[in-house]
Image (cartoon, rainbow, N blue to C red; front, side):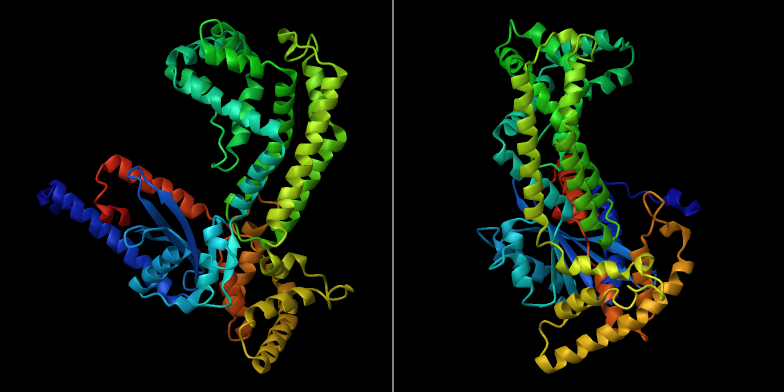
Length: 512
């Protein structure tokens, strides 16, 4: 380190070469481990940067046997329109194949493909996943869970028009205050007066100004944050719009829309419904490998939505808050029974449409992946339990059928029987593994650092000589992502790099 004082290469060109070398080293290290993996999953998303260039960003996930850990890393960023006039399924597929060839990755090891669920990615006839299955017929095509949930919410907006209108007005409110420092100042002053806040510091000011959130359908459940902001500061919002409406047409129009029993009632409905969806989305975004919880979590959320309809809890809260001594008593808003009945009908319609869209988005989602829940040692019954003999019988059949679908009929049957036999023996091992389960896999921990399923799968992979067929499935499971968050975050980083550097033509920087 003492010799570093003699290192005087500080020119832009030298720094550029240093960063490129560091990036190349990081990438080569990741690729060397990826090539040694038995299987890997591909996470893909497209993005349009500030130069209006349509690109594809890809990540890879695999199980590192030597490190006994699941690893996910950046693979590449490609310009989709560099050699093609359209970013269609063929272009994306060719780009993926070229990337694998460039890095000398065996396409037969590609065991799973995860995307945002766009038609070009998951189309049953000519989508990217369908084309990739020509390379590996056992490829698991997985539509990101968080995207499914977000799309289910977006689909519901087209079914309930007034909810869609509320989303539009919330967006207009955000834009109005965001683009007008004068109006924002009035809003902050009103909040300060009503909340008795002293905005003496910049930090205090920023805390209040963050109360209004942007609502849009392209971000995962950002609607929830926007609704929470309006719900919490509705009183200050109405007073602000009332002060501005005499001299501003936009404020007058929004004041007319927002100071309405139906609007605030809808906000109460959304404040009851959206947190359930936001919670499940955030849980899935953690990316833990616990396939047994996907279906039950969806069912639990649907049950919570049903309870909101049965108890009419958002409508009852609104009735209390609109009373003279209630939270919104100063607004002097009187609601008739007819208006309350209309809100109850809106609640029923919205929840019914939401539940139907969730079912539609998830009904065909996880026939194979849901079957993987049998590898949770905590769910294996004791040997003297009547259910032990039948435990996992139907699920292992589903798994065996999927991974032998492209085999000849005579070979298929024998391989399926091998899998069933191996799992029958594995059940006894999983019973003993219950006692060896580390504390970090304790389901009472929130969240678990390593789920019981992931821990069990890693152990199965280490016993490949005892379970050659099942260990192969376990390796595929560990390399299969359940959501597309990595490319989403990667796309944001790419845009940030391009925006900061202002060197849009220097694509080699993206390796860093």
